[in-house]
Image 1 (cartoon, one colour):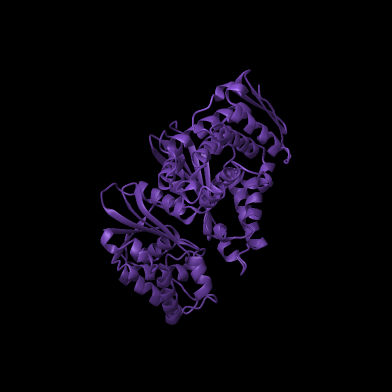
Image 2 (cartoon, rainbow, N blue to C red):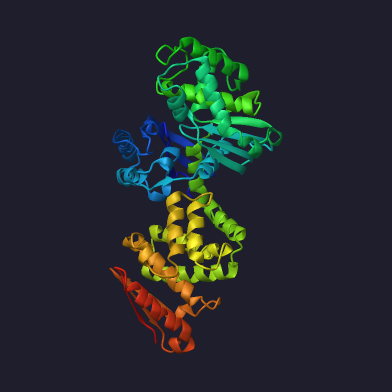
Length: 494
């Protein structure tokens, strides 16, 4: 990546949408601009986990303003990440379809563990480097992420379903602050976080850091009222809770440092923070400057660095975890991407799709770890449900659909096959799997695959069918399989 390159990260949180723009220089990012809008999408989820029309419109309007600022940015310069609210929303596809059209860039709905990884990456980049073992947590609107790490490396990551928006709506719904309401909210938070003690025991870390909204708001209030800056203590939290209870309700609370946009959700966040202090016996908490959006920016740098893309490391890890035949995986990857290069123009977008095809090819036998019978169904299920650092839900689902479609009838992929690039990827993967059926690298250089709108054609060199009669027969069967789709496939196997 060249010095001076502009990068942008968008965090579609449950309470706020944020846009961070930075300039890359020698491995570091200098902030150029930061925009934040309180959207409160988390409050727009109804009892059926559907986003209200009003909540979607608030999000679209905010993204339209972000889009204007991002005019001229290229796709590889922007990463937009959505978190818990859109993880939960059943109608998220409806929101995302229009949101992406408005923004002009893909929006990735990431898993809780991927959110935690990005948070730690952002926090660690803005902390002094040391060998201390750190507990980092981020109380968001509807989820709280916890990470155990050292230096730039996150060792353990978890996400829990509680946050400032969710807890404020549940335990302070009418904006009433009482000692019993805070106690109830604290006990409920401990019930959710109790299992976190097993994953993040105090004996395994020496310093605790808090990231993002709730911690920042608490720090602002304490600092503005004479408490030591740069640290949150248990006595400071006790003082804040007492002030809230004394005020009695959200309208009456008057405290220096409390911003209006944080006022409706601060009680819920404060109760979760109090529970974390008590549960983990934290004496003092250090606020961290970095957050998810900074982590997303540094992830863009890593993706442009040889060996730096965490998704590549995740694919290798999954291969080892599920005991994949590495040689066969590489054979199928080599053949599928070679065929894809014949039907997809060489440009930045198709290079990314080629890379994702290669990853799907390397994981195409992941389901055999469960059973060889219907292994592609098992493989698709694993990819749709595994925690895979670096990957968004849509990326994993696309790979799962490729793995599902590697063999067998194509009717199960009717909806996905309406996408031309997916059809090209799937055609190349299916051909690669059948050509590598003998678990040896085939003579794929003798095969030419071409494409014109709606139609694929495969041609072999003379004598190829005689040398590889089983492969020739399998290609004939493949022609028949595609006859039941909207795509035409013909083969001249000589």
